[in-house]
Every structure is written in structure tokens, then in C-alpha cells.
Length: 276
Image 1 (cartoon, rainbow, N blue to C red):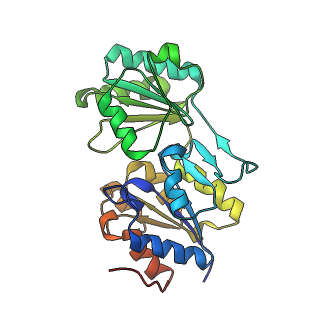
Image 2: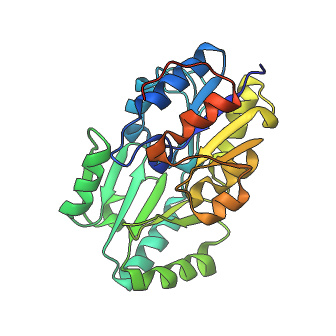
Image 3: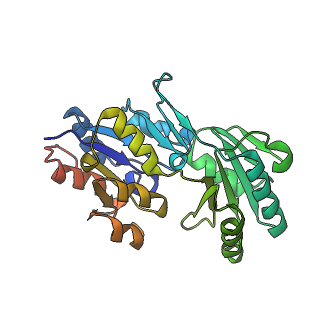
């Protein structure tokens, strides 16, 4: 069996709806590693909100965070990491536009540091659910944010989403990428132009000398489109958006039905004693 690289999105893909890795999928991934395959995490989450899963899977590989804006190796500081943040001037212009629209809130992340424009217990509670601890700075982002941010998250009202995205296209299309998160959050995520998960996979695959046709990637949302298209074996989860299913070469079961484990057992011909 050829050595494959297996790229895993987290939310809605590797993780069940209660943010766990199922025991069956975990054992399949352990078996895949045992047989020489390379497992990597490729997520829109920051490092701090994904590292626990990295260690739970016993990984020692590079990781893609912030949808490709950060590509690094958690256990090897000498690895050639890439961090591609937004220019601070662009960030401030976007923040000004959000102030003009009177959006609910704006959040900026500089690697693992979090800046929140105004206190929001619901927003902070959401982050506390998915990560152990985040260093928050709360206050006017035009004043508090002094470094190039890795990403900006904007929380508009539903009726403001299209207006905001049109503004971003009209004024910043040459320097940013923006995506809308799925329900229940009306969140617009903004990162530097040209950054996506496929960029991360390409760098890591080159490092391990893995050809494209031996990259297996799993995803469910629009931030997985480039990654699924790039991978030789792009797999959409059963719960994925229709656009991703249309693009993917394969569709597996949902994140609640061990979709990753089921696909890998069959595709890689793994013999795993897993719980029912």
C-alpha cells in the first residue's frame, strides 16, 4: 500500500456535533498511522483550539490553522512555518466599515491572542466551549489592535451579511479572502488573499514528498473547497454542503456516523477492531 497523507478538517468532519472524536474513527486513524500513513489536521480554528485534538491523536506532524494563514509544526520550532497575516492598514479599514454598518461585534486574532471590540458573553462563551483558554483583550479595535491580524471575524446581523460581503469585494478583493460560517453564527471570516487549506496541504505534502494522488482530504464546509479540490482523494462528509459534495470525488457518512473511519477502513484496506 502506498503511503498516503490524510488531512482532517475538525468541526463537522473529524469532530462529532458535541466536539468529540469518536472512538471508532480514532482507532482507525491510529491504525493508519501504524501502517505508515501521515495524518494532519487542517482547520479554520486557531492553534489553541485545535492542539488538544492533535495530542489526542498522538500526532507529530505539521498543522494547518486559520484556513492556511498559519502553517506550522507544533513539535518542531525549526520547521519552516508560514504565518501570513492581514496588513494592519487593511484591517483598520475593514474595522471602520464595520463601525459604519454598526455590526454586532468584531473580533481579531493575532495567532493565539484574541481582541474583541465589545464585551459579549455569548461570544466569549462560544470560544470557551471550543478551547481551554484564550487571552482576551476587550476594547475598541482601532485602538487596541496594533499588529497585523491573522484573521478578523465579523458578527453582523443576517440582513447585513450581503452588504458587508459586497463592500469587502468592492474595496478589498485584491488583498483578502472572506467566507461565511455556517449556522448558527452569521460570521464573516477574513484572512489574507491567497490563503486556504490547499496552500497548507501543498507545503506539508512537499515536505513529506507525497504526490497529490496520495492525499486524502475530508471536509464539510466552504472553507474546505480548495483542499478537497486539490487532494487526489477529496472526500465530502455526508453532512457537507451541496457545493462540496459536487466537487468531491467521494462522499462518506456524516460526522455523527464515523464517516472518516468508515471511508479509511475501506479505502486503505485497514483491519481495525473498533467498537460498534
